[in-house]
Length: 530
Image (cartoon, rainbow, N blue to C red; front, side, top):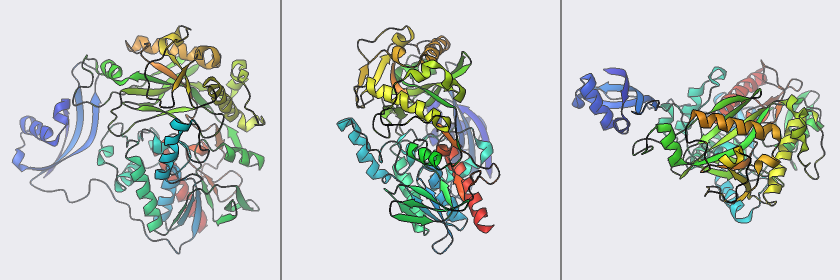
């Protein structure tokens, strides 16, 4: 017999199968000896009151054993002799596109400008030591994309666009914990992601596909209005193209613009990383002095408010995480957040960003930032990207032209005061105190100041000088959208070109990029048959 129950238990009961079994025995009358297995199908924490509960949906096997895996497996056939397609980029969009192509009987050729995920780690580690960023191997470029060295969040609201459960199951098939199928806000962790990504690459190769690292696309190859491949240095790769370059491939955007390939500027959000001691966030969110205690995870938060007609909100919250240098080239200073699977760092951080519309670029304060040397300003479709570059350049200048990040205590920022010293931080290249309210565009800084006041009123103790703002957070999404047809997902003019994922402006995270990658693969397979 198989039964399913919705139960509400204390954290210490939810922490182990034995605790759940004991609850089922006492509250549901199930004899422990008859319960052969318990699977948690859904898990969420209710911390609205002082007594914290964990809501569980469990499947209980009584006097019988489960006959299937905890996740649904996908079959990947050998496609060595099948028609081929090119996938540009080995981030989540590109990897899931390649795997889906194999399912559909198409041979994927994946080209990635950066290095393998394990080689990437070495270059990323060098940033704090040398203060230099390798423009082809960093937190944005390389196998796994920007998501490989982030928190590995798998929560998405884009469930109408595709099969989110399929994406999670594919991750499980390649080594992820099956807990991601149950958790309300699943995550993989930076320490776990490299092995999972490598397993996905091995599936592609084992099925007859190819993966090429340190192979940068220079041009798309055309026959009339049809894309027939790409050129990478002296190599060419033939086939229709899924373009999944990620949101930081600015050279690709400039190339597309120069070739008259239709793109448009896209709305964005920019701001800072805000870092608190994780114990403080735990106490605030769990409403108790002892914080998370032994059985609860590092606490998360989510804030959103409206200030002068624009949204200000927390973004990519990393409980028990670290702040990292996310620049992808010279003259840039960008920060992001990441955390390991245990989320056990002494700090918790989140992006705090202000919504920015393309029309807002007419605001004088936004364009008073210094221009970036050796970059010609084009405006138009590249206007938002060029603003991004200016803000990152200003932060780099404030950081003494290194990866030392400009920073300010939170309450000092709100009150327009300088910070003579800074709290300890997880940001390993180091911080430098600067008056961020002074040099950041007023459009952004004034809205952040008011938003922090609002958040402090809503959550007592959140607005504090124990928290430090670290600048700048600008890579919340792509600043450009590559235009594509709604039905076929091909570029609006060029047949055989499928703009894909976050870099093309059609996704906002690991799962939504994976979903979009699968959708592009479906459309490409249909295109090959037409």
